[in-house]
Image (cartoon, rainbow, N blue to C red; front, top):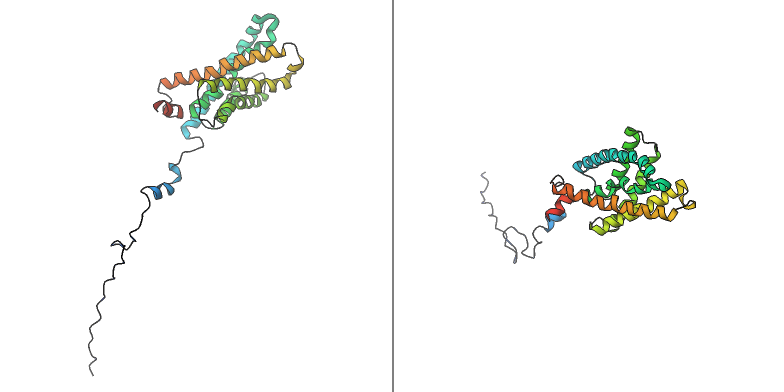
Length: 237
C-alpha cells in the first residue's frame, strides 16, 4: 500500500512588530554613541596613577645625579663655616635648601604623588652607599623627611597647581619640617640663635629648594628633553 504524499506546510515570515527595525531590535532610543565604549574601555586606556617605565628611569637618574650634587655641597660646608666666623654653626642652615631641591623638581616634572619623597630618599641613599656620607644610614631617614616636607604644598593642591607661590610654599614647608626634625636631633631650641637659625633655613629653602626647583624644571623643559613627561604636556597646552 502506497503512503499518501503530503506537501509540507510553507513557513510564513514573521510579522514585523510595529516600531521594530528589520533586525528585530525595537526602534526606541539608543545609547549615545561612544557611551558603551567608554564604559567598557580597557584599563590600559585609563590614566595611570603609578609610575611608568620612563618616569621610573627619570626618578632614578635624578636621585643618582643629585646624590652627587648634595655630596658636592657637603664639601662646601667646612669652608663656609670658616667664612662665617662666630656664626659658623649656622652654615648647615645656609645650605639647607640645596640639599632638598630634587624633591620639588621631580614633583614638578612627573606630577604624581610621592615622587618628590622617593627621589629625595634615593639621593640620600646614593650619598650613604656610594659617597660614604659622614651622616651614615640615618641620612636616608633625613632624606625621607626632607622630601615629605617639600611635597606638602603640592599634595594640598592635589598636584594640580605649579605656580611660583606653590614652590615658595614648598620651600617654607620643607624648612619648617626639617627644622623641627633637626631641632629634636640636635637640641636647637635650647641653643642661642634658635630663631635666627630658623629664619636662615626658611630663606635658604625658599631660594635654593623651591625657586631653584622651578627654574631648573623650566630650563630643562625648554630643551625638549622633558616632552614625554607631564611638564612637557602642560607646556604644549
